[in-house]
Image 1: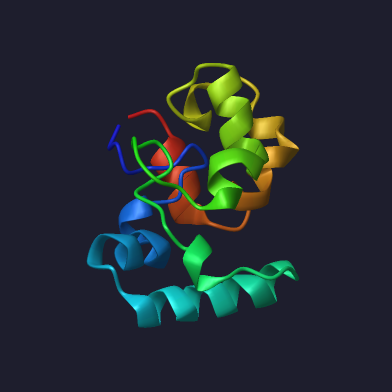
Image 2: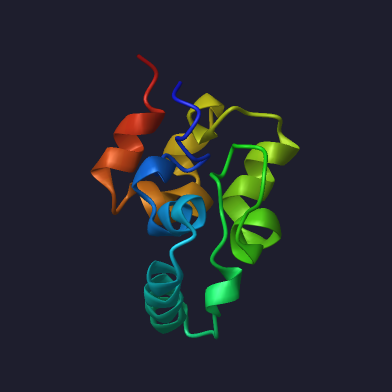
Length: 111
């Protein structure tokens, strides 16, 4: 599986937080912080927008690093992604993502 596919199936290569980090793009960090603050109902500052990828070594946003229940579960079970879990089809945690994102769901299907 491609290393930049997150535990939940999202593609980190397409993530604006990763792009802002790699390019040290202050304007994009500000844009992402504002969007994520509005979506999540919490204050997210541009300084928090630093991530190299969910399954990559290196910096991660505070949420992705220690708060994401999907990442914490997969790490705890030592799975490469949620696609390795036999419970994926009934899991409410990863279901938050894959039920609304066909691309993420497809990224987790064994080929």
